[in-house]
Image 1: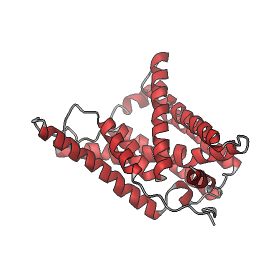
Image 2: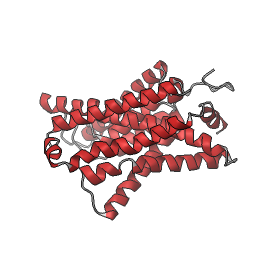
Image 3: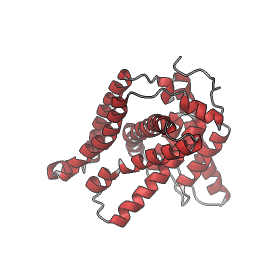
Length: 279
């Protein structure tokens, strides 16, 4: 546990205006991006999946540019966001390995039970494959990556550092930071549900918010265990988009969760030192 606190405390405290800017971006960019669905002309246009994909890509690129501006004005380094070359490479390899393991286990399950092997629509034709990969690469994975960098790699340590100043018991400070940041993660999805999906039922909204909150907790715990944001981003993306090769009635989310968390258990983290990471 001490190593975890050492890891969190190796992150420099962000400048106040940068932290506020990031929080405001999480509030207003999703709001503005989803308000277009209230405009009839835009709503009709975005029913075309190609235009919807393009709009999402534009929003993500603009958001990324804003975050890069904040990054240049702050004292954080790429290492504090788990975005060094070695970490990116390891996260990509292990994330893809977890995905392939799940597909192999699913194949073995179907074969052993005597069920027929049928490709999903994502893999049964070139058109379906190219469409699925396009959506996954240019929308799903980018969105998941941005959310992970913002909520897990950036906000979680920053709120822990702030709370540690007033809450002397570190585990409580971390727990509070975890709850606050994942509530923010859930609330940032409200514009999508209200304006894009037209969810009006309070029960449905509360249910969605609850699911998002607990999903955020799961992603955060995985990040704190591995300290690799790309690995968590791949898990997040696969939770949002079921990229299964073979059709089956199993829960891909459950299988992916087991695979990613089992890999996290054997994950070897970089050795912590007493010196701050930015020295």
